[in-house]
Amino acid sequence: MADTAWIKKHGKTAQGKTEYVTYLETGEKLSPGKAIKAHCYQCMNSYLDGRHDCQMSDCPLYPFMPYRKGKTMVKRARSEKQMEHDRKLSILRSGANKTMCASK
Ligand code: SF4
Picture 1 (cartoon, protein in one colour):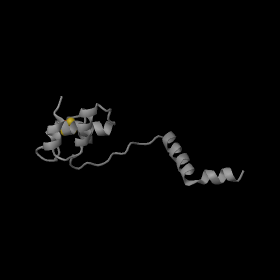
Picture 2: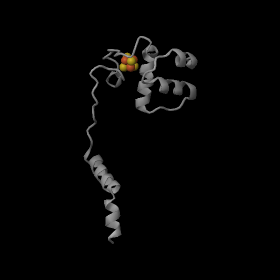
Picture 3: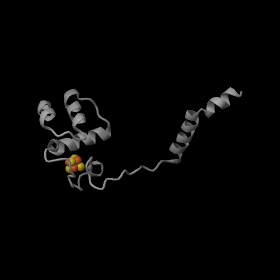
Picture 4: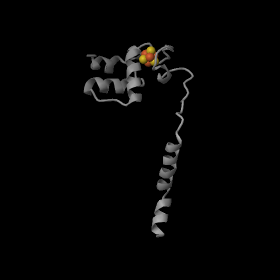
C-alpha cells in the first residue's frame, strides 16, 4: 500500500494526484478518465521530475496521458441513434415540448 501522507506532502500538484490519493485511501471506483490520470500520476512517480510528457508511445494509455505534447481531443464519432437522442434532448431542454403540450 502506498504511503498517501508522503504523496500528499511531496507529490507534485498535477493531474491525477487527487484521484490517486482518493483511490488509495478509499478504494473508490474511479471513472476511466480519472483512473488513467491516477495511473499516469503513479507511473510518473508523482511527477517529481516535473509535469511532462512520458513519451512512451507504446503504452496503451499514452493517447490519454494528461501532459502528452501535441495532445488533441479526439472526438468519438456519434452514431445516428445518439444524434437523434441529442436532438430530442435539445428539444426537451429548449422548452419546445412544453409549448406543444400546453397547446393540447
Ligand atoms: S501514458 Fe506514460 S505515464 Fe501514463 S501509464 Fe503510460 S507510460 Fe505511464
